[in-house]
Image (cartoon, rainbow, N blue to C red; front, side, top):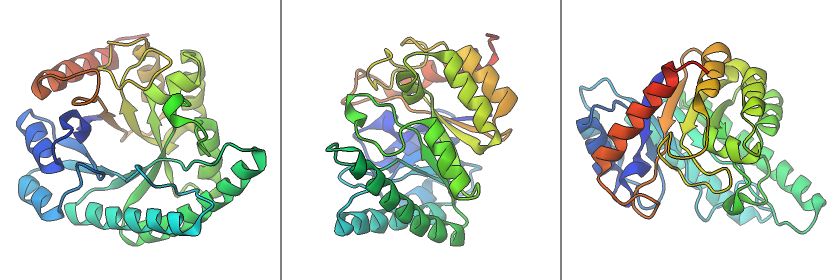
Amino acid sequence: MKIGFSTIVCLPYPAEYAVKNLLENGIDTIEILYEVPQITKENKIQKLTRGINCNLSVHAPFYDVNPASLVPSIRFTYIKRVLKCINFASKIGAQTVILHPGHFPSFGPTLKEEAKIKYIETLKTILNYSQNKNISIAIENESRAPAHKSICYPLLEEIKDLIELFDNKIKVCLDIGHAFITSNENIAHIVFLIRSLGKETTYIHLHDNDGKNDLHLIPGEGKINFPPIFDALKKYANKSITCIIEVGNKGSIYDGNETELIRKSILNTKRFLYERA
């Protein structure tokens, strides 16, 4: 399992600042947030990683966009931004782009079904483009926390349906913090889902919370019991799985030194990884 960090640990600074900081702290597996305020030019990342064996991935835009919108111009804007993100990923040598599900107006069940159809159409366009660029697409499960209401495919069970629909051409980004909220803190249910998804889980977002709010805490500073989850991942998930720690900094519960956040997060994650349930 490769363990790395999201550049959100260095918010609100740009991606090149975050990548430089993470590399200086010995982190060579990095997920770059391709979103304001961290969008940057590929040559700035190329300069930092030239000659380094660095494992890069990219998180696609998700602010002010909606891949499941019932308004065509909004979906077009989303596609345009994500295709630009895929180009960025290809140029910096990244292998994976992470997407969020779309959302729908909560005015009735028929709108959700219409939004799902639009979301699938959007995914088809993105997947065709990403395959030509040799970029893997992984869909992240959402949490149903207050900030994630009205999501088309918030659950891991629903993402499994998407995988089957696309003949396993997309993968799963298992966000453990989101799954903990959605499962009502039921670790056994998360383990069941990991077993059900099997080797389609190639990517993890790791952070902690209180079971209700998407806090992006350091692993071990919330309520999640991680050892059984890691045991299930080692047993059932893809053997080349990547674990990205998504601990927030500026504007979150933390407002401290990034180096200390990185150090403590890595220490706790390795402890949970090798601790038996």
